[in-house]
Structure formats: C-alpha cells, structure tokens
Length: 291
Length: 152
Image (cartoon, rainbow over all chains, first blue to last red; front, side, top):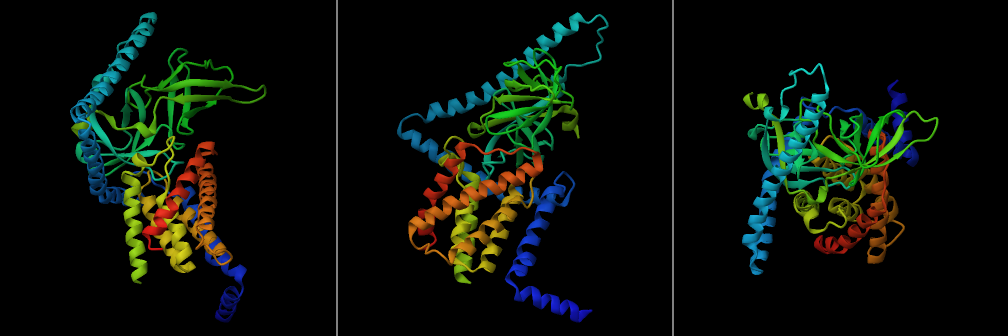
C-alpha cells in the first residue's frame, strides 16, 4: 500500500501536468469551495479574525486620514479658505441630519394620510423614529476592490453600534454595518452586490426585494408581473427589520417585462455616491443602547 | 532573504496606503487602481514561483481580512495572477517597460474577469463596465513608479 502511494507521488512529481493539477488547480478549487460556502457572519471564526484585523489597521487608517485631512486643510490655508472648509464640514454633518429629519417627516405625512383612510385604525404602531438614536461617523477607509463596495467608519462597538445597524448619508440609506470592531466598522454599501433588503415603493406601496448592482444602480428582484412598479417612483426601506420605513434608497429607472417571464426586470438608480462619502449617521435602536 | 523582507515591508506599506488614502488621490469616475495587484505582478517577475505564491497568499489574506463579508476571494485571484505571470515571464523580456506595461494591462483585465466570475458565483450578478478601463489605465500608470520604488 505504502509502495503504491510512493509510486503515485513519484509520478505526480515527474509529470508537469499532474504537478500543476495537484499543487495548483486542486488547491484553487478548494479555496473556491471555501469562498462560496464559508460562514463570515457574526460569531464565526472568520468574523472574529476580521474584527481583530480591522482593529489592527484602525490606528493606521485614523492617522492616514488625519494626515490627509491636515494636508488638505493646510493646502487650503494657502488659499485662505480653511475657516470656510471647517464650517463646511460642520454644516455637511448638520445637513445630513436635517435631510434625515425631512424624510422622517415625509414618511409621517404619508403614514398619517394612509391611517386616516383606515376605518379600523389602531394605535398599535408607535413612531419608530422615536425609538432610535444616531451616531455621527467619518469615513476613514474604503474597499480595496472596485467590484465590492464597502467603507470603514470611525465608529465601533465602544460607541455602542452593532452589526446590522442602518447607515445614512445625506438622508439616504448608505448601507448597513456588517463588521464591527472596537473602534471602527465596515459598512456594506447599497451599491454592493451582496447588499439585499426588503423595500417598498413610495407611491404604489408595493413591496419588493432590493439588491445592489454597481456603483450607480441596484435591481428589484422577484417582482411579479401584476405588481405596480412605475418609473420615477422612490424606492425606500420597508421597515420590516425594526428600522424606520421610508428611508430612500433610489428611484426606479426602468421597468422591463417580457411576456412569459415570471418576473419583471426593474433597475433602480441609487442616490448614494460611494466615492463622495465623508460623514454618515449610524442609526441604532434605543433598546440596543441600554444593553 | 534581505530582498524578500524589503519587498514584504514595501508591500505592507502599499496595502496600508491603498486602504487609507489612495481612493482620495487616484480615483477616476469612482474607479481606483490596485497597488497590490501591480506589486504582486512585479514580485512574480522578480522571484521564483514558490516565493511569489507565498507573497500572493499573504497579501491576499490581508486584503480578505480587511474586506467585509468575503473571504479567500483575493487569495484565489492573487494566486492565479502570480501563477500566470510566472508562466509568461520566461518567454518575454519584461525588463523592457513596454512589455511590462502590457503585462500589467493584461493582468488587470484577467483580475477583473476572475473577480467578476467569483462574485457572480456568490451573488448571481455578473457586471463589467467600460469604466473599468480606467482600472487598467491607472494600474499601468502606477507600474513604472512602483518598479522604480522597488529598485529597478
């Protein structure tokens, strides 16, 4: 038996093709298998390793971002604009919060209109926005891959955020927290192909399933032919996951349907511009804060 | 060993630069280059296969640990890149910059294709845009400065 394996091993080493097969192609197939099926969710070994790595690179990202901001500011000083830049940054933060407040009010308005129409109106649904608080974060890093959008923000578990929290920019949904370390977190952006969430259309109130597609567009999946999806309608969060409904994600750009198909093809133009992200709001439920 | 350590250290610095400020300095239409992919191509040209594969594995692992959700994605891509470069390098003189730049362009396209296929396998979405030509272009632009930085 041992002789057989020895002979087999000698054969592998002597033949260039079997050598490539055993030492390159088989390991690659094994890695692809790991890539497709390994668990990276919270509690897994890989999640912990990633959190530790995020913690290790945090000081470098913080310093790097600091140096960049400092140089940017000093360069602007030459043009006598540094004051304006600082004010602008503060205003940007405030603007983001105010836009979010406007959306909150718009959502309330639509909700009130609908509730008035209902005869058997119940007061079961509490205002979900009152059950939330927010933390401001700054983008300190970005994905090293053009095909997989995410950013790293300077808010971590020490600030009380946790995996799954919604992240908002300029009043629009920017993404969700997927990896949280002590000092920083990764935000999976709405433009990422791995980003999936249940959404609602603002005017027709149809429910659909949103998935990121590229840096500008997302798609609505499993849209049945009888569903009323109109070009120009706003796609917003449905609020099924305990977070507020009505946070806009994008606008319906095109609707295609070919007779005989099970589903419509719906393209959504997303409001987020991943490369212009600077400040974000992380939404958190108040009961999570108490924990 | 000394040369290896120097390359390893420079690689780490490039990786940290890439994930921190590179996108703010070199982004065109939201597309930014990959210093690590260019670096690994140079490594594969400089070192024998076994050593290049070690570099590819470690830097792929760094990239994957940093990435949200995905794992061994960059390891697979880097190993393939390094292997392909090693297969090609004995047939062409990459000391000539034109060939080096052409190789980077080829590797960048191969990198995009392999990644798109892997992401398709994971998400059912296959997407390649004309904007990715900027990725190829930016990588080729970075090839000469990196080659000079690495001492040749």
